[in-house]
Image (cartoon, rainbow, N blue to C red; front, side, top):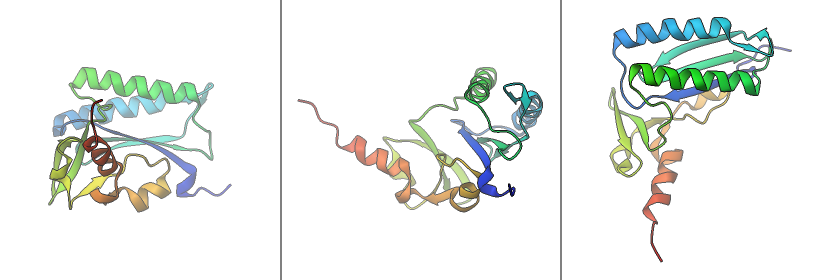
Length: 158
């Protein structure tokens, strides 16, 4: 099978704040150590990792070599949660998202998402590198965050 971008599975974890350079350096070492032992049913995963925009942890697996299993994916989620506890961030906060405000990264809540109108946001729903290369930065208005903001604006009580 040809090694194409769509054969490389990705997981994106956006933390709820900017990381310092020192934190990034430490996280990169820990993330590298994790992927060096990351395996699916005892078979090592051919994987890589990086941190983007001082706030997005990226894990990538070459599925031509071995496909990540449920257990291996669960282990990566546990690992990211442990990193969050250690470094004081939350990578699973779905009420906060980052957007580009000019060249700067800013964070806002879904409730205050009007701050991101007209900006680019990070599409965290991507599952492979092909999608990532073409659709990582998208207009806020085309994002899941905009849809969530609309859904939240229609709250009412009976």
